[in-house]
Amino acid sequence: FKAFTISNYKIPASPFFLFCLIVSINNNIEYLRLENISYWRLNLRGLLEGKKLKGLILSKIGLTENASLINESRNVYETIEYIDIQGVFLNHSIWHEIFQYTNSSKIILHFNNSDIEEIFINNLKKFEIQKNSVLYLEIKFNSSVLPKGFCNSLIHFKNLKTLKLDGYIIYEDTESLLYKAIYYMKELKCLVLCQNCRNKKPYIFLLQNPKIDCLDIQSTSNNNDAIMIEFFKLHKSMTRISIKDAKVSSLCLKEIFKQKNLIHLCLDIDILPPQVDQESLNFKSKNIHNLDLCNNTLKYIEGVDILSKLYRVHTLRISKCNPPPGYLSKLNKKCNSYLKILTYEYGILDFDDLNRIGKFENLLKLSLIGCKFSGCSFFDLLTSCKFFKTLKTINLLNSNIRMKDFQCMKRFTKLKRAGFSFTGFNLLTLKNSLASLQICKLKFHTMLEDSNYNEFCLYLNESNIYILRG
Image (cartoon, rainbow, N blue to C red; front, side, top):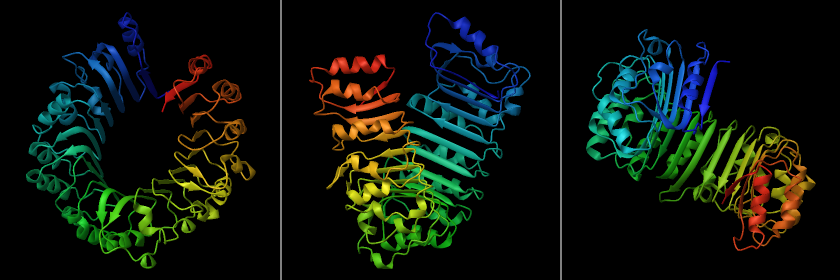
């Protein structure tokens, strides 16, 4: 094997066993993952001795105060290509080694602590060496304000093809520095910017990055609309667009719909006045694989028959859009063998919708959270269902299902994860129905004062069913 993982090791009395386990790993492994090891601080230098790793993943572990990646032969930084560090306190030495010596092409950093973030930022801005080897950089901050030093340091990552920054706050006097850094990334193809406060200045730098074909923007303001319109006019070959928590104009929406090569489209938007003329919208991306429409988005495009134009959608999510009954029934029949994941939340389903859902031949995951059934029930899905042998996950939380609906679940022979609302059900009767299912995870809502609640939970534990209370 080429990869080795040790996770959730929580035996406080066995540090020697843990050490022996790790050092005994074959030196030919290429990827090592250590996660959720909470009791003991690990010495990375000793653990990595002799190994020529391509990838190192550290998540929620403790390290010795003098921890280091580099051993005497310095083989680690010569071979490592992929670094993923999440929720781990790294000292100055390791940050120095990562950014000064390693030739990693992909770096992922997730911070859950402001102190860890501060050490990282302070060390990054010390290194002015060009990081030409790094092609992918992903950083998830802990709602921290980006300092000028960090933005200046990004300039040294000129060969980046993917940049993802999430969970950050930035002030106006620093924004221009961030945009300047992105401007110099001429090879950039994928840009993800998800900040915790609404952006005020236009994304003018977008117009200077001709190779971008994947754009994911969250929390943007009205001031950016003109730039967005111009960007989509210049970039006709976008493959992925995601715009969330944003207000855009009808002209911007038109330019998005004109894109012909989209594979992924996610919209959670409001439209600025004047309202969009829906007859003028022409949706051209017929080969989309993932479509995600949220909140108010649908009301602006309800008159546009998008679903009938989709030929190969794999994942479809329509959430909190308040679609009318029968809306889902419009989905093109060519999607029957392609659709794998359907999320249709807080909508109203009629018989035509259920009949359409039943035609999906290879559905793996179905989520109908908060849905209401109009003139029908979930049981009616069975008359046309073709995914009895493929469905692995179903979520009907907060949906008005009946015992009759629940009892039919046994026909889904590969079902492993499920979510239901059991309020008003007889839990002992329910327990008998659960016995016919092969699920390993169950999320449910029920009335805690039910006299049989404890017995019901005991049964689930004895049946090795992992409980997730909704």
